[in-house]
Amino acid sequence: MASIYILIFNKIFSRLNRPETPFSERHKPCTLWHMRNNSLVVACIFFLLCGVVESLVARHVSPDLQYRLTILICLTLGTALTFQAWSNNRPRFWSAVRAGWPLLVFAMLAIASTAWSIMPQSTFLASLALTFFTFACISLVALSDWGSLLKGITLACLMIGVLSLLLIPVGGLMTEVHEGDMRGPFREKTRAGMVYAIGAIASGGLAFTARKARWLLPIPFFLILLTLSQSGTSTIACALGLAALAYGELLRGKSSRLVLGVWAGALGAIGIFSLVILNAEVILDALGEDSTFTGRDRIWPAVWWRIMESPLLGYGYDAYWRDGSYGMAWLWYEAGFEVYNAHNGWLETVLAVGLIGALLLAWVIMRTGIAGLTGLYAHNDPRRIAIPMVTMIFMMSLTESAIGGPEGPAWLLLLLISTASALKERQKHAKKSVYNDGIIAKVQT
Image 1 (tube, one colour):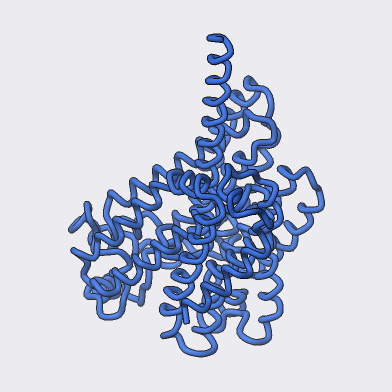
Image 2 (cartoon, rainbow, N blue to C red; image 1 turned 180 degrees about the vertical axis):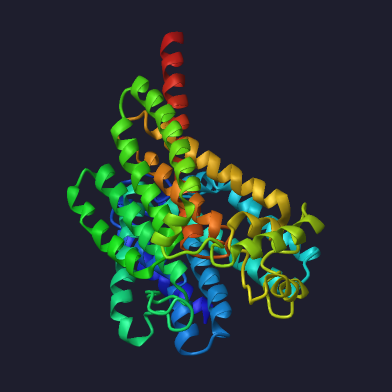
């Protein structure tokens, strides 16, 4: 069945994207002109990798099918996109692979954790899904430019937003916990809030990079959906991301203004953080949260104690929260209620693959942020959009298990923008090297 899906997908993708050129010209150095028309393909792939299909099937058919569908979708899209990117333009594909090396090392670490996992079978299957998910994202970046990625992400989030409204009469709202909050096609409201926040940032970034004000119009739609979801973390993350986007656009241009603006922004962030700490109860009440962060003050200490028992390597990728895991039963006892994740992306990562995995993800986020700051210096460099996106993802990771995979909206976005930012940097240095070599050659002659 997976082979049939791969063949069909490759046929459709090749017709939509690959120009009709002779075989001898297909592997020549790539230009971006034929990549600007694949926004709908990017939107469909983003839609599938967000977990929409698995969540709907789990909710309306059987919860047992969700995990299997996740593995099938990752395997199918990862294989199809890798083959397509490799056959379409091999030099660009290998450049994207080199740009995404920390993500591939993280996937290899997840596979290696099968050796010490407390649930080896679950770890192997989840790490396999993570590996193909990573290759799908890297290959998608190799097949697209920044404009196609931003437009495709925006369209995918719009599709999910419209679907969320259509599903209100048939399970689109939470019914047990957080009754009445919008969850759309997902099983809980947190993931829906992440998608709406991502849509708002991507839409704003597309408006500034494409210089088309009409892409600002979807932002109010996403903010309304975000309000209906009552997701406090996603609301704060979206607000910080939009603020970073607007602030970056104000500073973009002169180096002196950028340097002063970064220092002013850092001081302002410290001031806002202090204000939030001093008025935490008022802010939490306004967001509909309690001072315990919905029980996280009991989850985090329990998770931390378990981490201290195996800090370097963890307990195996995606193994701790599986049925039959002794660790999950112990945490339920310590927290006093049922817990299915650490509600913190960094604690979740250390729990799964240890400090090594967390350091890899920290490097990915830091590298992407630096690339975004570099993009502020250049003329309309789309890498600058990585700053609000990384800000949003980092904020989400503090109170939700938003990073580390094997799938999910925030993790998907991080893989795409980190690889795209690094690939843009590699191409920039390559062009500069070629230019300098040309000057040297002229001087020598």
